[in-house]
Image (cartoon, rainbow, N blue to C red; front, side, top):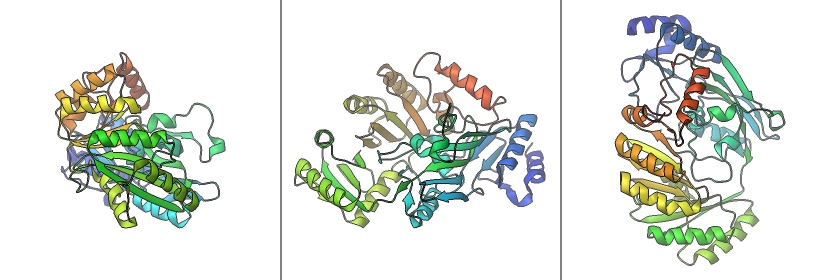
Length: 403
């Protein structure tokens, strides 16, 4: 079948837009939503399965498919309005390139996603992978998007500016949908003004002592941009660390720094700008090099018991814990059986678990977000039938046993 796929794709988008990926199958890089829609329509007609990637740095390329579609050729910023703090970009633009361009305009996206800094914005939004920054969630950052469905329809949701966003917001279905409900091709973003000051502090100690310190700092209602507990193995550190970040105006950050030092004590060390950048880069790189990465969402009191369940089911791994957001991210090596058992134990506590990246066998058996409650799997499948009726998009959302 592969020669037929190659020939068909070359006819649709041109020879220069089709090459072989690492597995030898066709890799197509269309330059427009219309071209992607054509490819999806052909996949529907021919019964072909498609793997969708950005730059291909997040998920392994082991999903069974007839072709790979990359959005990397769609990397433009089509609208930037610093006065409104909004922008419209194509989904294939690398995150580090986008942040650099926005910084020149005095704005930025208050997200610090895990993985390679060259990950595309589409990959980050589709997986809803955000990092320690707690002021804005990914869904808060996205005002709207354009999506190509699995059967080739172009669907627009939300709006380009804040005042245009009204009604039932289909954007939320796409953010964190892992591409199971369509291919994100364009996004309207809510930006923030570039902070004038950015300071990072760190505490070292045991996990329990740092959890207690973090609770005391949160109780002091300090305006933290991030408060992240990091296990040994995050970067080059050999012990547990609590990293704290303050961002904003210079007077505000100076005032909050004094309060933080008073609450945290003399062991609270201010990092230089290069060391701070290295610290947060290490947090982002934590999942890279590990075969499996997943996240949990809980409240502050639920963090210790959730960490205990993690240790019991999948071992220590590489851990980062957002004490302000309740987001726990684990990276390491785990079987589908242990992950399934962990998901069941967490579901009893109503703690959701999302598989962010893993080998195909794990994703297929466990699913990206699974069904924490009875009947959720059937709801997911109904939505999949609406947006991808022929299941052309190779995305295992709820796993083969969790419906």
